[in-house]
Image (cartoon, rainbow, N blue to C red; front, side, top):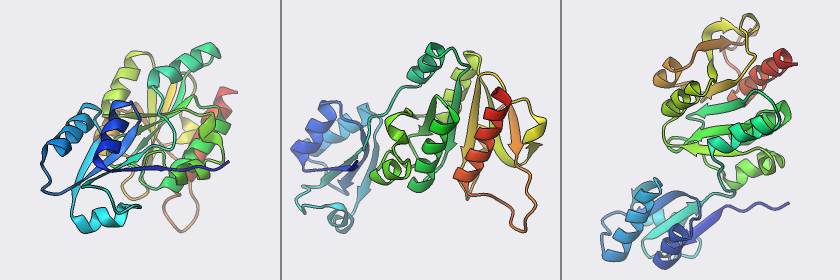
Length: 245
């Protein structure tokens, strides 16, 4: 199967992509370009809560494949995003307690693809990522997921902390990976659960961590102090699987 990330260039093409409902991950606009058509595109981007980045002409030329970008260029997701409600509905239809994996500040597409693959094999009902400071569903993510992206829904939310609060109101509880947390074997990880994994460099952000119910650490005996983020996700996901069996 061949995966392609969509690059959309030119004012008319970008504007029509927004109006057609296509999922646009990022919009790049020539810095200082403020004419009518560009303002219309920026308005549409804000309506859809798309990340807008203003860049110099040299950067836009680098990103452009056609070199006919007309001051605007957009990246569309290789796959359509799901809604969090779709994931909860899927769990209900299977008569299973919801199991979601939430990723905070994960910017490496290989890590995201690997987590989606793990989520599928571990029986998670979906993966949730934030709109900002995170990689989207690029071609690299699709390839690394080894086909799992065809089966495991991914939702993109504006505010991860707010999403956690809303899901708590629906009966879910949350555990985040943290080196200073309670050893995972000492925690009860059954029931409707969200597993929160941070980036390798920064871990889970303070605000997101504060909204979690527990922090879980993975026992480590080696000389280095941390696992790759996608590996940590796999270890914790399968402890949840073990406890749910």
